[in-house]
Length: 315
Picture 1 (cartoon, rainbow, N blue to C red):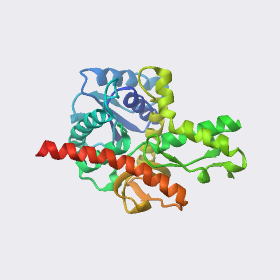
Picture 2: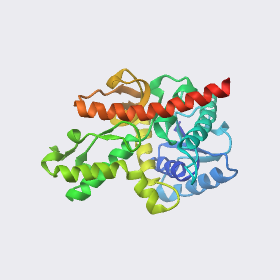
Picture 3: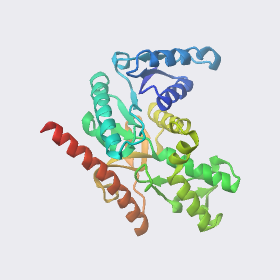
Picture 4: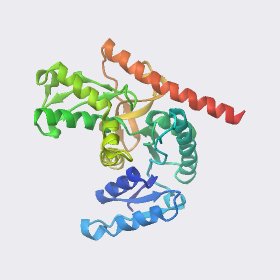
């Protein structure tokens, strides 16, 4: 019997993720969305590509969670994008309510699943999904670091005119303007990046990486990135389904690691069938530790706003 992956949210990120997972060829996919007929239409279109790409993987669209029952992995992309005139807190609290509702259904129908959260603001939403689910921390994590790292690797490869496959990098912290690209852990074919590129150029690429999502939003005029995000999500899904033990950056709940406690932040982890099987702790300079703490503090601010809203709603 094939494994099952459910993707919640049939927008650009969710639908493209479902397509990429179908193209792996060894797992069935369920696409869930509240918009009537939208996931059914997109799923049918994907299913009809099966004979061409050579896969018997099933793709099913649904407006309910019945079809998602007993999923091995659930990817949550559902949420709204920030609109003109909308404050950061408006976006935060709207998507908090959406991800809370989704998570309750996911837990009801797939109590043994692993959840990968993708909704923005990413780190705060991972925290919300983790707390709402009641799952152990290894079974709830978020996708951001692979995307941020991929952007950094792309820019380095373009600058040096080398294969992206030979560029290895690591980005820590929150998925935002204060993410922490670790230049010391950035290599090209085993050669430290500082040996190949001037410090000023490295700083420019770090700045471009931090603004990577915004650069695409500005070019698209409407909407945001989805090709690279969906590729990153699929890499995580595959690491879990095939128990690959990949060492990848992910947003995970920390319990003292890196001096951070009770907060979801981007760190390197080992991903396998058990989800986050290990949080990889690496040595940081004082400057890097300070940057990571600053990034974590930004996430904490959002978490505090959510907690206040929840307390007020309960009170």
